[in-house]
Amino acid sequence: MIDPFGRAISYLRISVTDRCDFRCVYCMAENMTFLPKRDLLTLEELDRLATTFVDKGVRKLRLTGGEPLVRRNIMHLVRSLSRHLQTGALDDLTITTNGSQLERFAAELADCGVKRINVSLDTLDADKFKAITRWGDFSKVMAGIRAAQAAGIRIKLNAVALKGFNDAEIPAMLEWAHGEGMDLTLIETMPLGEIEGDRTDQYLPLSAVRAKLAERFTLTDIPYKTGGPARYVEVVETGGRLGFITPLTHNFCESCNRVRLTCTGTLYMCLGQEDAADLRGPLRASEGNELLSNAIDAAIGRKPKGHDFIIDRETRKPAVSRHMSVTGG
Image 1 (cartoon, rainbow, N blue to C red):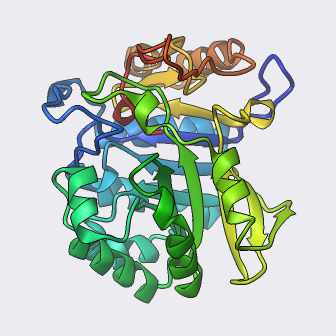
Image 2 (image 1 turned 180 degrees about the vertical axis):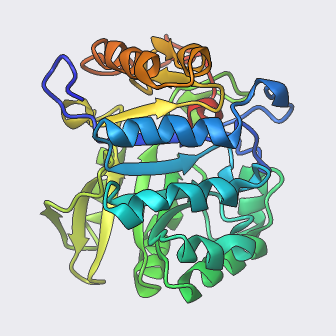
C-alpha cells in the first residue's frame, strides 16, 4: 500500500475499545460518554480487518485503546493474530497499555509472541500518578511492569511531558527507566478532544526539555527506529535510549507509515486530521474481502501529507474533536 506521497503503509494501529479504567487529565474528561457496546466490531471482525491489512503488506500491528486490556476476551484476539507471527507474514505484534491489567495478562501476551510493549507512565510519584490518572493505582502498574519483565517482554515507557507537573521529574525517570533496562519516550501533549483543562497550560515543548537534559546528560542522535514516530538519542551516561515524539515542535509526518483503525471500523489515515473511511460497511457487505480491500485502497489514496496540530492561546479548541481514546494515539 503506497500513499499519494510515496510512503509505504506497513503499520496498523487498532483501537480495540474506546473505554479505559483511567481518566488521564490530558486525554479524557472525567465523565466520558463511551460508545454503546453494540456499536463495536466483534473480535472476529477486528481479526478479519487486521488480516486483510496484513495480506496487503502491513508488517506491524499495535493494539491500543482506550485501554486494550479492558476489552472483554481480548486475549482471544491477540492469540488469533499471533498466527501471522508464526507464518512470518507479520514482524511485530505489540500493545500500548496503561499497565493496570498487565500483571494479569503478561505471561499470556509473551506466550502469544508479544515481545515488546509500550506502557504509559507520566510520573514515579504515587500521589501525582493518582492525580494525573484520576482513577489509577500506581502499585498495580508497577506490579504489571514487573510481571512483563519476568515474562521476558521488553518495555518502553511513554511519558507525556507536562509543564509544571513532571518536567522536573524527567531526569529521574530517565535514570530509573534505563537502570531497569527500559527505553523512555517523551511525548508532547496533543490537541485531541475537549477536556476540562486548558492544554496551553500543559504544553511543554520537547525542544526545551532536550536542551535542559543536555546540560546534565550527553545525548547522541542515533538512527534507531521502532516503526513509530519517535526520534531517538543515546544517553551516554546511562547507556539507554531516549525518544522524542514531537508533533508540534518538529512534526514527524514526512516518514509516516501508519494508519489507525477504530473499534467501530473507522479508518483514520492521519491522527491529526478528521478525514476517515468506513470499513465496517464493506466488511459486513460481503463474506469475501474484495469490497473491503478496495475500500482500504481508496482510503490510502487519500492519506494526507501531514497533520494540523496546533496549540496556542488563540487556538483554544482542540485541532481534532475526537478524544485520543477513540483512535488510540
